[in-house]
Amino acid sequence: MLPSNTLADLVQRGDPDRFAASLALPAALRGEHKTKAGTWGVIQVIEGELKFSLANGEGETILTPDNPGLILPEQPHRVEPLGPMRMQVHFYDQAPDLRDHHRQTGPIAAPKAITA
Image 1: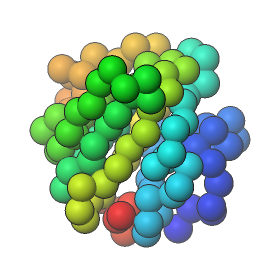
Image 2: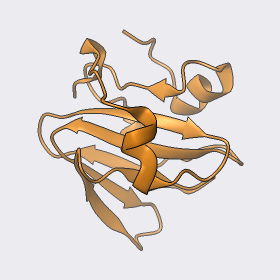
Image 3: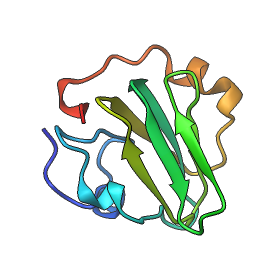
């Protein structure tokens, strides 16, 4: 299980490029947060659904295993599980192509530590 740290700490520390929420989705992810400058993220839901909301109120999307979410650099946002779910966040130093995301990441084996 990952230590209880903020997402920014995990990215800055150079932990694996996949951040997996531990047994309960950390408060740091449920509240408003953002990636660093020059860091894009792709939220990949493995099971269930996740609500992705822009902090400015201009957008809200339901993410599913077939509908990953793109996080732009420094884009304030929050997420909320819509029931039991499992997810991963993949980080990139350039804009990823979501059309190719499934091919790039391959089938995702869900580690035990990412249920929420």
